[in-house]
Length: 308
Ligand code: FUB
Image (cartoon, rainbow, N blue to C red; front, side):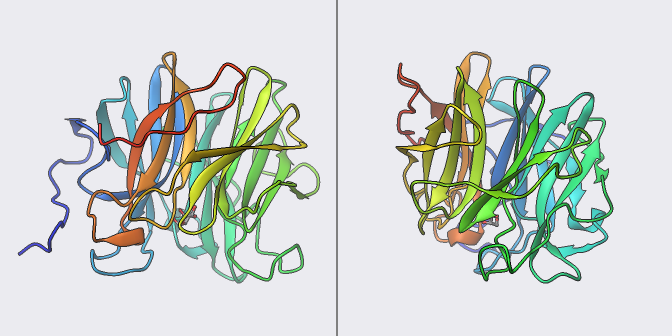
């Protein structure tokens, strides 16, 4: 017996499936997408919303990985990372991002710390974009610090990593406040102090940093339900000028976590919404992809969310 809208498991791990539209994964709930382009392939890394369909809470134990060479046919890989891979963590496979440096792939994740109250950020490493990944440090790179800015224990979430043209890597993250710090060449240690991004708007969470034609873009979620907005700067250190909304509230879902990539001459906005099972709400999310287009001055046109 199926609940209305319950997802059927219709294909197996590693299957090559032709997805005919959004959401790109239809056999399970996927959230907080990050995207990586590597050697002519797009990899999507997502959290797995595992709560029973009627439960309105996050149950997230593992991250998932999908790849495509044409943005239409997606291959599911065996889950390359689980909160259990971080012995110091006690659960919550929240938002993450994978980046390549040299021949290694670094996966930054937010999890619940086992002994320090609150969320923390860890990093795993692999020789392959599909894993297996192992904890790169044996400890968190960022832990909750009640003295830093907020009195909340979940402000160290949503890591987003960016490598500038000169090879310097930066880690951005946050909830309520957006933080950033330089990373050392080994990608596993901070290189200098944690800084706060001065943004012209309120910030909720989900920063994503990318660069195009000498402009830095910082896109992020605001308000609840969330919409995705962005600011631009000529420097990674700001000042950031607010430019507007990229994506409206992704219907039927409180959050709107996103990634922005270029692939084979086009730009894409990767995000999640609650469209797969319309009455399942904010804890049963699904990754979608739509075209992202720039104006001639570098500003971003609003996303048109589609089911295509
Ligand atoms: O998936 C858990 C949290 O929900 C993420 O960390 C946020 O970005 C929001 O999508």
